[in-house]
Amino acid sequence: MTDETSTTQSWSEQTFTLAEYPEKLAIVKLGPGAEIPKWAESSSLFSVTATASETSLICAGRSVPTKTPSIRPLKAFRIVGELDPSAIGVLAALLVPLAEAGVPAYTFSTFETDWILVRVIDSEQAAEVWRRRGHTVTAAVPVTKAESRKAASPKNAPGKAAPRKKDSSR
Image (cartoon, rainbow, N blue to C red; front, side):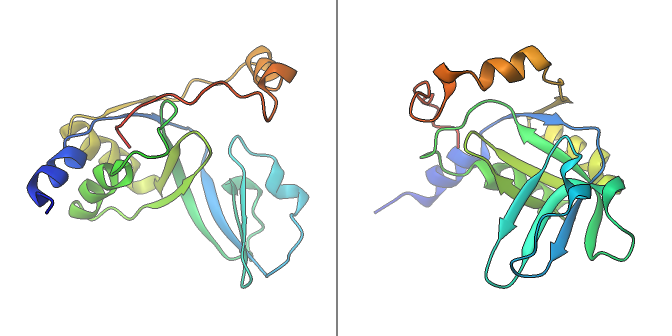
């Protein structure tokens, strides 16, 4: 039998550093099987999710045509560092406080980490809610071209990735 209190405490006591990105983003709805429009690719953060019923994009809000269905303007917060894929409660530790404060949030994950999007009008409140829970919120540091080339070098190519960090904080 599991002690639910200790499980709850373990994820609720986790703290993270979040990087806040300055660009105003949008979640855009396209039809199923839609081609990715060129306007969507000019963003510091770009993500495509395709299902049988829709294609959704996360991209710069400034690029989205006026009549295209979208949720915007949004701010992105990235959990800094590579998360252990077996970690439990990462999103709960960050989303439960937002829900308690009445702040809507949208999430997605990349190979290394999790991202949280909140409406621009709620971004300061979200940051303050997280700080009160012991999390750190900082401005995102832009990646230089040299860092980007290093990450894309053959030694970092698929199949040659460095071992994943062990961090039970997720």
